Image (cartoon, rainbow, N blue to C red):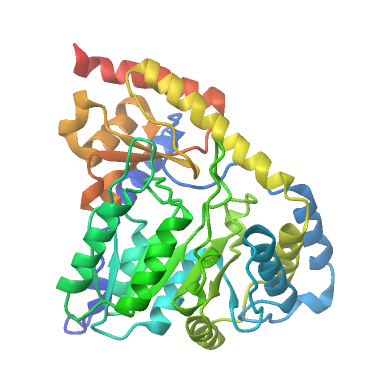
Length: 403
């Protein structure tokens, strides 16, 4: 082989922490072990029937079998714009301010590739969903980080956030061009209010940086909390783009339908790079996604209620087993501090032993950055009976550290 030929960008990527857990989980299942899996945010529910029916209908039409539009078919872009208008009172131009993507992850990664120059700097607070950080690394950029802080209700501590952000803006060279935000947050479930975006947009205009905001979990909110869009703030279209996905809201994770919306310069860059790199999502999927957005939204509310119920069952049953947690305000996750009796293990060893000894799979917090090592992320993708079974296994597991 040609050892002198190096792949520098790939070398900047570390070993994927979650792969370790996945490998152990796979071997256990191959050996016949019953693993209760909370590790990946992969919805276990069915896509609503009216969406599947439309997919089947559209797939039977030969005209839909050719190449599609890389930026999304027009009716889907209109449906996305209409959704923003209905939910947030925002008017978007479906031609210049909306781009359909193959899930929000692909849209984000290609946007970063399109707008980033080698040596640029972005600011990404930690813990963070890994692609939010490493998309910039793959684009040849640098990333400045600081730790997120929140209160006991999983609300962002705004004063702490903006103090850290301004320090990063003023102390990082070259001056950052991009700030990444993600609320409701993955993995921590932290939430914000419109006041946060008002301050962020004002700061972006003052310091001259673009905001890339991810609201993948905006529809999964509970107990009266309603997640805002950054575009509810006047002037946000001048400085921001926002990513959304149908994956969690409609149980369509495998369908890979998302979008980026907002600033015309950034959306134009995404549309242009996608025109070179792909031919768009299979048209029948886009037709079905259009029906999803335009149809009765009770299915979204039902999915949110399912996650809330699972959260309540898990927090109660795991609490009785010796692992106390707080109820999140949004998302399909619980960001759980490791029980004190096993905190010395760190999130990687704790997650590994929990899987091997209690047959419970979770995501170690270290996989989301150094600021996450005292935590694990629990995805609510198992039903209530399985959650209670996991609690019984957990109680036995923790007993060895409590004696």
